[in-house]
Each structure stands twice: as structure tokens, then as C-alpha cells.
Length: 168
Length: 165
Image (cartoon, rainbow over all chains, first blue to last red; front, side):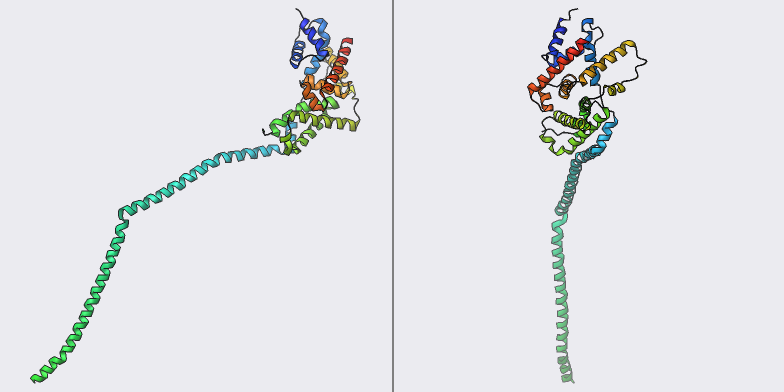
């Protein structure tokens, strides 16, 4: 197998003439098992780089930092707000629909009542009132005429008496 | 501008920051403390996040500065190689080949640790974090040619020492 390309790459690597992609090729090459003897001395260097890349912090680190920044609770709160804000337009819509329905219902009933009996009620009222008034007027009239009749009879009475006396 | 979330955008940088701090201090506990300090510092600056062009670059700059402060305070710039060796797993039962590979890697680690901090950090940012020269320059607050010169020196040293072995 010809390793000329890799040999050239590694020389260019030491001279800082390789791109990030070419450096990636070198890392992949030295990761494999069958590296030729004359390039073996570079294996530990690239293996060391791969090992360094695995240096990581423990899982408890996140918890500690989040507790310190109180970000965790904040995120939960943010989620709650999000839920509410997501639901609130629905509630608003329901409320608006309810208000419209109530108003239209009331308006409908009022309209129905008006068209069915609303105006006649007024008229009958006036009629009854007129009748009442005329009835009352009649009563007053009749009582007045009764009273008049009584006075007439009273006026006539002495005349009768006079006549009686005349006859005597 | 896109909103930055601490949990989703800043916290996941922790391992990169840890490797950077570890490269500079060579002490796991100290590196972890530095990453924690970096993240808390970033959290406290959350009102200014919108002004930060690249959170990753910025956080690495903060982390490097804190790590440099830490080593200058403790004057631990020349790290003992024994400490790294302590971190290695028990090698007694390892096969010869694996053991040999481990020792070779430790040797590489030792060579890198002997490099000046600037070269050490540039090697990490380029080879492990796969950053462009421009990004390295931004993180370290140095110019592009400075990055190239330091990387060249570091690689030449590594090449010479690896070939000598």
C-alpha cells in the first residue's frame, strides 16, 4: 500500500500547512490498527489527542451549576407561563362566544316578545284606562244625576205640600 | 438576534471549557472550579449576552483568563508530571501492548505540558477542539500571525521529540 499521501500530509501537518479537514484525515488514519511501521511513532501522539477529547465533567456538575443559577426552576416557570399563554386565547375565545350568545339570546327574546304582544299590551292598557276613565266618568255622572234628582224632588216636595194645603 | 439559553447554549460548553482549563492548570479539581467560575460569571453577565457575537469563543476567553489567573496565583505553572500519572487507571493487569501505548501517551502528554502555555493552548484549540486560526486568535486575544507562529513552534518541538524517541 502506498502511504505517500499520508507521509506528505504529516509533513505538512508539522509545518502548519494542513487544513482542518486534512488534519481530520490524519487523525482517522492513525486511529486504525494497521499503521505501517515507519509511521508508528506518530500513533501515540494522535491517540493522545483522541483521549484528550474524551476528558469530560461529571453529570453532577450540571445539577450543581443549574442549582447555583436557579435556571432549572426558571425553566419550569417559563414552561408554566407558556402553557397558560397557550390556553388563555382559548379561554378568551370561549368567553367572547359566551358573551355573544347571551346577548343574542336576550336580544332574540326581547324581539320575539315585542313582535308578538308588545304593542297590543300598550294599546289595551290605554283602552282599559280609557274605559276605566269613562266608566268612572259615567259613575260620577250617574251619582251627580241622582243627586240632582234628589234635589229636584226636594224642591218639588214643598210644592206638593202647598198643593195639599191648598186642597185642604 | 436569537435568544441565548443558559441551559441549552452555555452549559453544554462545559467540557470544552474543562479541557481548556485542564490544559492550562493540569489539575482536574482546579479545572472544574475554573469552569464553574466561568459559567457563573457568564450567568451574571446574562443581560449583556445579546452583545456577545460568539458565546463559545467568549466563554473560552473567559475560561482561559480565569485559568491563567489561577496558575499565576498558585504559581503552579510548572506542573508535576506525577499528578497526571496518578490519574491513570491501574495498569498492573494491562497487557504489555496497551501498557506500552499508555506510557507513550503519557510521554506525549509530558512533552505538551513542557510547552509554553500559549503553545499548549493553541495545540488544544486546533487539534482537539478543531478551531480555525481565526477562532483561536479571537479566543486568545492575539493576532493571526501570532497563532500561526506559536502553533508552528509547538508542532516543530513535538515533531523533533517524537522523532527522537
